Image (cartoon, rainbow, N blue to C red; front, side, top):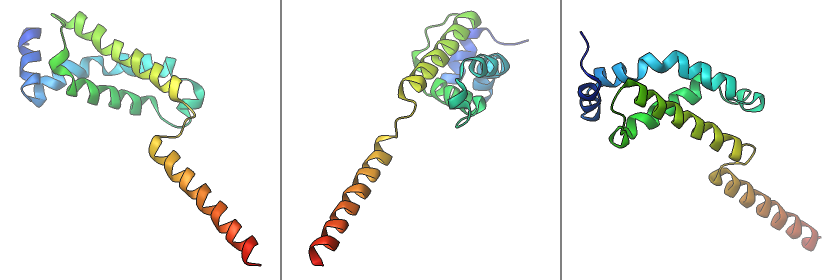
Length: 123
């Protein structure tokens, strides 16, 4: 016999790994299918739906204190809502390099420009 949802959620919030599994594992297949169907082809070439689901689960674990769901249906809605937001964010930022890599690229380009100027002026 399983615990009521509120007890499982409270145990998960307190760090009980078994309770976290009880909350998330029943949604794994459905969430994976949901993400797979909505992940654009270009993104699927760089990142698998399993990676996206893992990221959603990691964020869900970090945000368990914010869950206001009173039952399994509400929790599922919250979890799938996270997936919708994650996918929207990925679509919005696709193709843009991360801040860290864009800074490295900018430095690299500046370095090449300065090196080419030195070569031209020293001849």
